[in-house]
Image 1 (cartoon, one colour):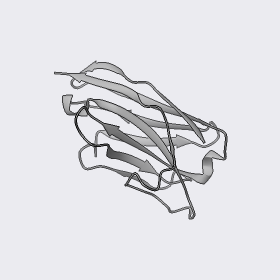
Image 2 (cartoon, helix red, strand yellow):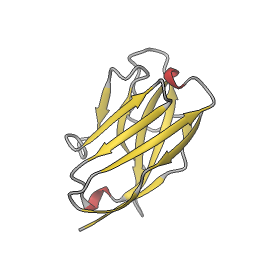
Image 3 (cartoon, rainbow, N blue to C red):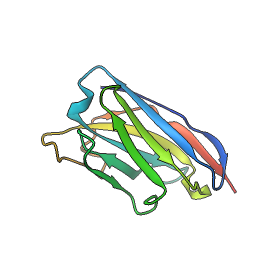
Image 4 (spheres, rainbow, N blue to C red):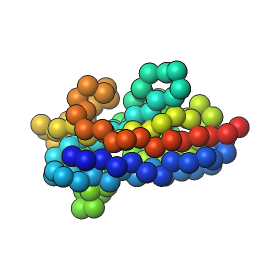
Length: 126
């Protein structure tokens, strides 16, 4: 699966932003999809994930209630709606795909994800 992330930018604290990740090359609906982020000087961290069918989602505690992950399997598209952005959300955001042996499979760590997008920069000013 080839993944292309987009939608990043410079916003102010409290603003909203929607990231998109376009997938191509393999059957998108066979993959668990996730978003990760990496801030300067920090390790890459999990943000949110969604099961292959979209029935199950999970978000990191740091973004719960503010970020929503979704997918459109008909359009091979993954999205991350980010509301009430904070300066701590500043990072490069990556979309990733991992094989889903079960329709309930979902991953919150990086190792099961085998396909990664190039990243999109999100900067939140105070």
